[in-house]
Image (cartoon, rainbow, N blue to C red; front, top):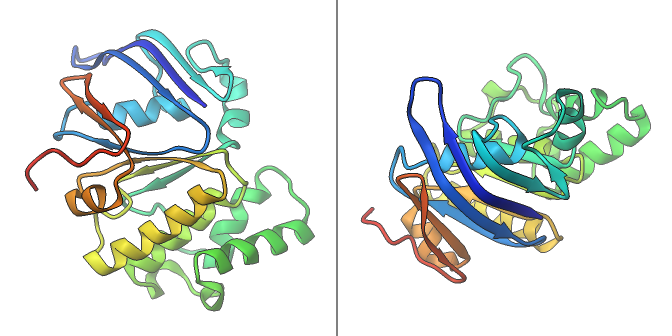
Length: 228
C-alpha cells in the first residue's frame, strides 16, 4: 500500500525533516506514527498524499510513484486518500451535510448517490441527527466526526489522521478511536500521527517511531515509548 525507499526531505530553509526513511505499510494495517515534536512525523504523513515531495528517494502509494507524479494526476491520487486534521478544517458556513457532500460534488457524483453516501457515512460516525447543523453548533468531538465522515465518503483505500484527538478530551478521544477502528476493520489502511500515550499503549497496533528524521523503532504491537 505504502512504500518509502531511502526518502530524504530538506526544506528550502535548510532544515532536513527526513534523513533516509525506509518503510513498508501493507493494505489494511493500522499504524501509529509517534516521536518528539519536530522529529519529522508531519512530513512523513504529508508525503503520502503529495502535500510534500521528497528531496530524494521514492514514495509509492497504491502503485503510484509520488516522487514522479505529474501535478495533473494529484487529484486522482487524493480521491483514494482521506485526511483527518487536528483542527477539523470544516467549511464554517456549510451544514454538516454540505461539508461532506462537497467532497463528492467536486468529482461530479450524481445527486442521488451523494445523498445516499452522505447519509451512510453520517450513520457510520453516529451523527445522522446533526445533518443540518453548522460546525459552530457542534462540540469538538462532533466536528471531528464530521471531518472523518468527509474523509471516508469517497471510500478511500488509505486514511491519514494527523493528531485527530489532539484537541479533544479523553472520553471523546476514545469515541473517535472507536470509529477509526471500525473504518480499519472494513479494510481501509489507517496511518495516524499522535502524541497520545494512553491511546497507543492501550490499543497495541503497529508503531513507527520517528526521531531526527529516521525510523528509530518499528514494532508490530508497539507502545508509545516516550514519557507523556
